[in-house]
Image (cartoon, rainbow over all chains, first blue to last red):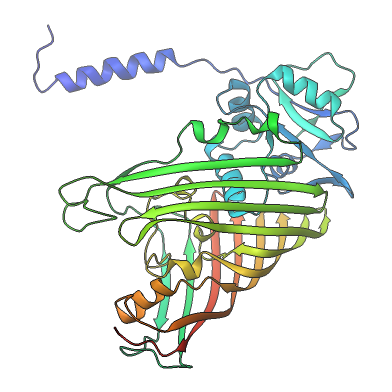
Length: 147
Length: 278
């Protein structure tokens, strides 16, 4: 029986922590970085990818501005992309965007509400880049490899 | 990691009353690195969920326009000293900050941005609205890993690590910024300046190097300056600032995981008519 003694907090901690740990979703890394077929780049380094999504690298080439799209922070695809694709923390990239927005030094990526909207935007926006949980069956969208 | 600060502040404070033509001169020089500093115990609601999406700007605005905002309300409880109101033996809701900004990019290399800020801070500021920044940003060179550009208008002052977003609580690790660097007493001088900024960025495999050179006229909040210099704002006379130079060189490793910055600021102000204590 559980008595309210000195061990009670420890017991509660174990129960709560244990149930939290086991209820965590098992994230399987499956994120594809996708671009509109017009994008003149086929291979990418991790640094390039980080620079594009942190809005430091802003053009594919002269007069061809990169259009960056993201999913909401609450989406698993976004979390997987930031963690395994960009190899950053989601608060880290959020801080870069926030500092840009609120100091007037830049604009963050455009946030879309769903993967369906992402497919639609990437397919129809020249020079667009984004990410999806699986490669879509769309001839206007190309998967980009990076290393 | 503790915030390391090498900070020299020299304020040649003038005697009780400022004399006409005399300079109030402040020079600050600081080297600091990113870290954590625990300050006054307080609770805040840095970003209220509805703030950023309540309009769903994406559906209202054209694609080259973005609207962002935030709202923050702090609650202070302290053991002895009062912070923004009666916080000793109580809870003071004395600090409110609300901001709304618009970003518009008509051309690939030209961008306009402006932010309005409402701030209420204890007895010092009963609630006021100001234009925090309002600028045109022209990209001169954007080639490979290099970037060079110009900003003109009302530009934020790049001082220390957080001055450019000092009124946006969730952009810095502590609710209140360390007062040894980010003075709240003379804050109006450090917010933004009307002028221009030349900036350059270079990305390398080892990190990013950023440089900013700003020249501009800082705001001259007469009441605040009188309070600092004279200890009261009940005085006649007027005060004006002179164009200030602020420059910053920073190095960011691994996308801002570590940031090192050196900033230099030279501010000058002068009293136009000798202030007289009432």
